[in-house]
Image (cartoon, rainbow, N blue to C red; front, side, top):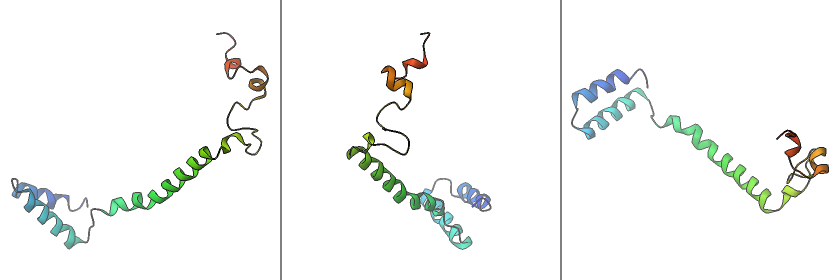
Length: 99
């Protein structure tokens, strides 16, 4: 793509007022050299199903109430997990004793 840039610039200068002609000539150059300008979009399009699945999985966790259940050594994912926060009942205010 970068190696074709001088040819594309020359086409743009030659046909400055005619956008349709510029697009046709540029597409012809890309076709002759075997370059697909949309090939850069392919990795992004491939990851879209992964992101959709991740979104669905996380939204189902929130909808089913699984945030109140434990996860490995963490007793609950819904609130504070430190012993000091559970015993004092003040949330994270125990981290800032001088305020």
